[in-house]
Image (cartoon, rainbow over all chains, first blue to last red; front, side, top):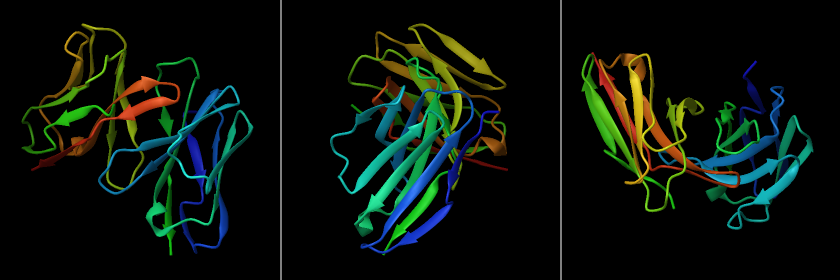
Length: 113
Length: 108
């Protein structure tokens, strides 16, 4: 099973809302990632959890808050987002040993009004 | 730190070949190649871990020139299913960067 699942597939939220994106994998991977992808652009790495330890991209605003309840689950909590945060949010996982394949989920398409 | 890809876009007829290049201003220790179809997630194609390495499966192959900090993806006898955006990627852990992307369209 090489599947990474993400919910919801689509999300529309207002700038005052609080919502969460969820990601799950059952491949025994120890690294999980959140990426943000704008239209016609490459994915940009936001956060990495490796063996439950968080690595932060310093340029990510604090209105994005990641959480890793266990090695199979990854959440991204959203609060007070801006319209420019509208994008495809991709979750990925890998074995966690370094330079290895990342397996991507189908993504959550987020629209902030 | 983001690798630069060329060309930005290419249109091929079925059966034609294409080469996509990926260049980095920093040392490359490994290169990943992914393909993303419109509205879908990136799908892993292959990874090259050391200079001089070449890999391939089906009619898609890649090479890695560590000294030149470059990698190339070769698509031969292209099929309609090859259409999509191709990204190279490099880095480890919390410093992984996708390249600028190459849009490839195969037409009948």
